[in-house]
Length: 76
Image (cartoon, rainbow, N blue to C red; front, side, top):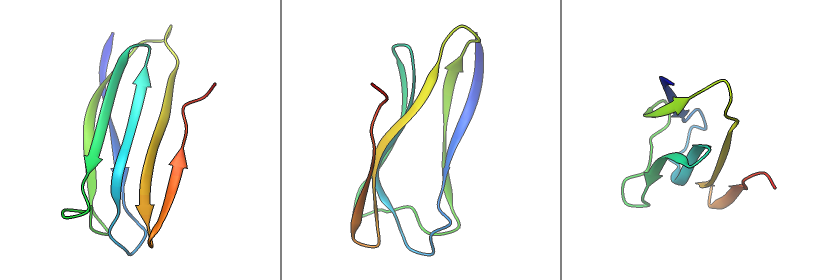
């Protein structure tokens, strides 16, 4: 198992908040940003994750951008 990093970058020119995560098997790595402390444009948040060639990772989350919620559901 290898420890890697993933990052949520904000290049939107507006602050963003919400939840975004990477899941590999049962291991979930999340970024949670609240409305009172959004991620400013030009910044990023990074989190550690565990990877293995035999596991399949996927992204999921909900992010608010420009007063609109964007949803990235987990694959079915």
